Image (cartoon, rainbow, N blue to C red; front, side):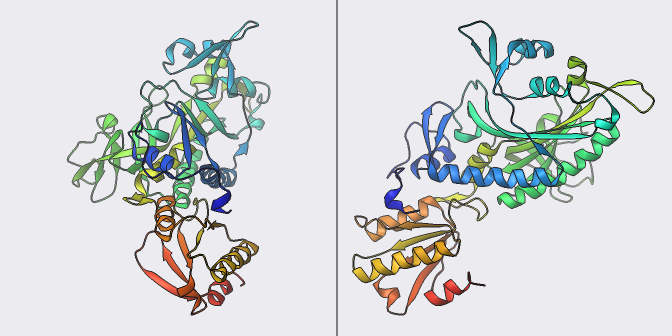
Length: 415
C-alpha cells in the first residue's frame, strides 16, 4: 500500500476529547476514528490489525474443535425475558420495531444460541458441541471513555461448549485455558492467567490479565509461584493480599486489563430454555456448558496501551498492519526509481509493505510518522544508501540502525 493513496492521515497531535492512551494513539495514527462516545470506525490500517487479530483467534478456535457460525445482533425481547435479563441486564440496548415487537442489540448470545440448539441437540450422541462466532456486540456503557477497552460497540469472539456432564465440560475448560495462552502468545501479549469470580454462573472462573496502569482490575500475583488472583475474589480463593494461598510466597498488588475470560455456565441457561438430551439409559438430562470470551477489538486497544512509547505504537509482528515501512528520502529520480523497484520486488515476494512515497513530506516527517504507525521494520532508501547499493534498516523497538545491501535483503525472501 502506498501512503500517498491512503485517505486516512496521521495527525500532528492526539485528539483532545480522548482520555485513554490507546484511543489517543490509534486516532492520531489514523487506525480508528471516533464517531461518538464508545463508537469507532476502523480505518484501513486499523481494519488490517483487527483482521489479523481475529484470524489468529479463529485459527486457534478451529484447532480446539470450534465450529464457526454467525448469529444475529438483533435479538427478540421474548428470548431475553426467558432468562430474566431483559430487565436485569443494565447495559442492554433496546429498540422497538415500527411494525411491532421489541428487540435487544446483542451484548452476548446465550439467549440466541440456546434457542438454536434446542433444534439440534436431543441425544448424548449429539454431544459435545463447540460453537463460536466473531461478532459485533453492543453494550450501553455508562462511561465509555477508555477507547477500545470499554466501547459501546465492539468486536468479540465467544465460544460456547456443550457437554453431557460436568466432567467432560471441565476437561474442555482446561483445553481452552491452554488455547487462550497460545492465542495471546501469538498476539504478542504477556498474559497472566488469573483466578476470578464466576459471578452468576459458578464460584470461580479464569481471566487472562495484562499488566497495565490503565487497567480497571487489581490482581494479587505471587512472586514465587506466579499464582494470580483477582482482588474481587481473593476471599473465595482463600487468598490474601500479602501471602500466596498456594505456596505462602509474597504477593504483589498489580493493576491489569482483562483481555479474555473463561467460565462454566453449568446448567443455568439449559434450565431456562429446557435444553435437554437423553443419556445412554434414555433419561432426560440438562446440557452442561462452558463459555469462553475474548474481545478482539479490546485486544487491539490493549496492545496500543502496553506496546507503545512516547513516539507512537509498537505493533507485534503477528498483528502489525504491514511488516515493512519503506521510506524514500530525497526527490532525485534515482531514489524514486529505487524506492519503486523495492516496493514492487518486496510485494512480489509476498511481503506486506507500506511505502511512504509522499513527495511533499520531508524526511523528518516521514520518520516521525513511521514511529507513530509502529510497523516492525523501517527501511530507508536514499542517495547515501544507494552509494553502497544498500538500504537502512531499523526495528521499531530498537534504536540500532544498520546498512544492508538490497541484494542480501531480498535474498532472504527468495529462499
